[in-house]
Length: 316
Ligand code: MLT
Image 1 (cartoon, rainbow, N blue to C red):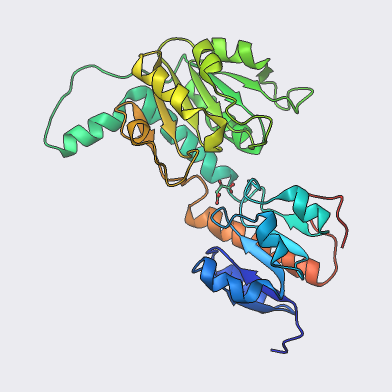
Image 2 (cartoon, rainbow, N blue to C red):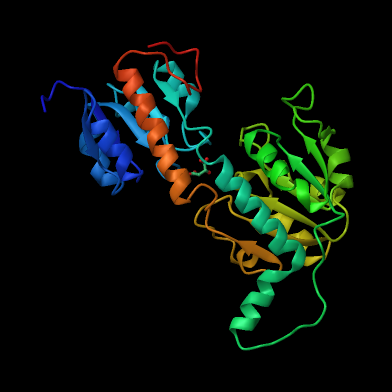
């Protein structure tokens, strides 16, 4: 493979089929997904960088990659990429926005059921030898679910909930009208009316700690909070206080402010169901994410229009 071909540097593990697909294009592929030290020797000549969420594409990293023309995020959220700096350096950033929609929607429904039925402590207790058949938990039917952020994943979750007999509300500052008839509300009103609040917003500087003590306090007593989006949407100290005081009935968290999480009191709280940022980690979603970014990079190599560029102001 001639050294003059553009170098595609894979920084985080992606589906092996995607790496193979890339290797069939006019590029050299280096798999440095073992982490930081493996990446460094190749950064200087990388034309493309492929990441999931582990690698933080900071301005310092970009300064060490002067040949970089495109960053491919094998997933949805691009909050681990310094977009402003990438755009300033005329680097195109692409993602795989549809790859994990079903997987995250399914996880949301699963967590919702676990939370409302109070199943998680029962599973742990039964494994520990207890056999407590006492009444506990509630039906999901009849509850009001409020989605905060009403993009692809929330809408897919909503469609999976259609047979559960729930009332659905949504808040999304980027939607002028409802795409599917779901009632859109201002956030304070949605929080006051929802017994289950499910977060699906992308993380930005504007919505960091969106769910602070005040907003959590607006949720009805005994209600539940689900976060499968980004940890920093929630003020974890405020969440912990609301769980401790009994204001919240429980929380299911797939994401944390710091990952792996360091707030053990939250992680080990009896009414918290934690999962290790697994929303997009199914075999199917990862295969799709890999294929989507590989195809996008192959399009870039052939100088064809891109499908998933998140900073369209940067041209090739
Ligand atoms: C995503 O944004 O695609 C998901 O959070 C999963 C991931 O970070 O890989």
